[in-house]
Length: 195
Image (cartoon, rainbow, N blue to C red):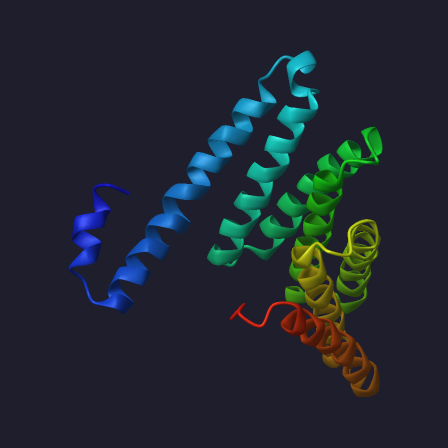
């Protein structure tokens, strides 16, 4: 990063972004794979620690994101499913941990995105629906959490995308309207938030 900074700063924007993308998509996967291999070599007693498992789930999610940039959809799906399995185990070990529940929802969403890209609309819908159920439950526990409210809208939008891809226009429209209503409510709560 320090070496590329001065060089990248003098390049035109499009070239700079492409350079960053190339470095990210070529060097980052190797680093993440090495870290995951390190996790594999841990003593079982250390590897089972929830803190280590959570970190491994994060590493796998990031690796899946990089594989997505590289267009390796099979690798993306496999990696995100591995992270999903870890996060399911964590949530089973402590069903009150909202951070772990949120992480699990993110894994469902990423699995859904991979399935969507692979053309598996049924699988994508099920994964996005699993994320929606988790986020709805989290929103019920803390209705003031605007991040979760926004994520609820995104979950509805992703379900609508699947419905649209399947040709269910009335269903997609209804789902998009739910997503829109949530965003409109958020805008009323914070009119200064440009996001």
